[in-house]
Length: 99
Image: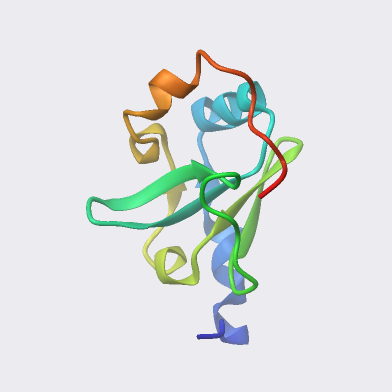
């Protein structure tokens, strides 16, 4: 499925909270919001690689890729989108940029 050009304006309307921007800066990698059974989920691109149809939202020096399927419903990227298991990964090394 391809993103329609008329939907491209949505990415500019999505806000990233300061807490998420700080979290991403600490992890030193790009992230992606995709669909999970519990709703939108924010994962490093090393776990969930971006797709060509994703919207791109800047988060400091990094990028949040947002699934076209989630973008239409989002207004804010917040810490509630970070899964609990990521707390365990925070103790480890920063994200890998390779996928």
